[in-house]
Length: 455
Image 1 (spheres, rainbow, N blue to C red):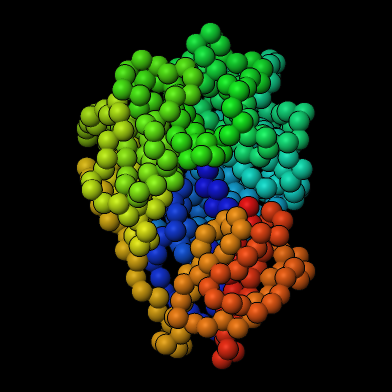
Image 2: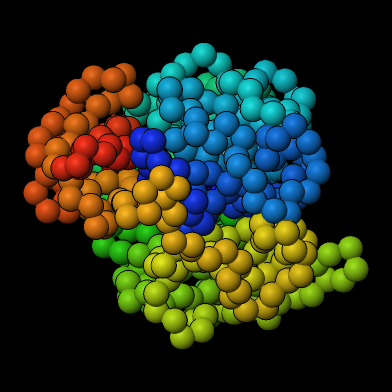
């Protein structure tokens, strides 16, 4: 469902140097767990944790951000409805949390409070945790799944659950996957979008005549420019390669100005967008100009009350700021990160803000600032910030340190590229997709290491 596609964010290690920093790069969340990726590569998690979604060996609420279990091991994390999948640096899959529909993929239906490895394969490149089923993508482009099949999420059969990973489509040209709520999505390398499973509110995008369940794989329209997709309880949002945003599904959540269900992809405005994320009933998105927008509905509730947040049938701007960087959404929970890496939240709290409080906010409230980097050994050596991560072609950095040489290795320790630096950019376009370690050496002999994903 919610994909961290950490896709490995800015894992930074500086030899013989210790830094204290609270800067947030990106956040991924769902109903019971939230994980923040800091700019220095640390992962911190928090949440309600009712079924062990945090993997810390308990089912207790964790209202304050704590280091993610095995945090330095993960290159990708996905929080589903009540379970979590994680892609290890070595290409293996691990899982924890609720398992009543075999959504963990370990061959059982027993909940797991700590990470367990799923199978023995080490050629996985992406994971997606859905409502009660899971998906994964292998390096050869094959698509795999496990867990619930009652809505034909995987195949048209009488088998209700698949306890272990199995290949769910014969093709091996898949680029993106998304496990939604009783529905399954895949984007092929040619940019086409394919779906199957529950379509009762139009959330598959295949038209009203498609019925309430798609028992076979169906293509969404004829477009071949799909880039990203997220699907929640009853609605779906996707982005095309040109930056346009498209929605479909339940009317109250689709942002198309009506309560009528939307059965085919419909564009949101005419603008270009740089990021989006969806909660159970609502969506958040950032335009290219840095403004933040939201639409849909949110139920804010606790053991004492239930409040219906006013529905927004069309996108409405959140405040007047234009420096928003990225967003995330959970059930009645809104999360956004600014360009200065400060973390903001609003909506249902009850321990889901990660700052040790339970009070809710109706407007964006900063819950974590970005402290200046502190070098305990040498206050004059300024920490480097690398961006973007993942890298498409060019890696850039900002600091006051003059790098002299660089050395790139893959995860097997094999040298891929070396050379001298020139300015604050490095062209990595020739690298294959995968994870790498970049070692810079300064003119005065200090080493700076950065772990990055080449997309």
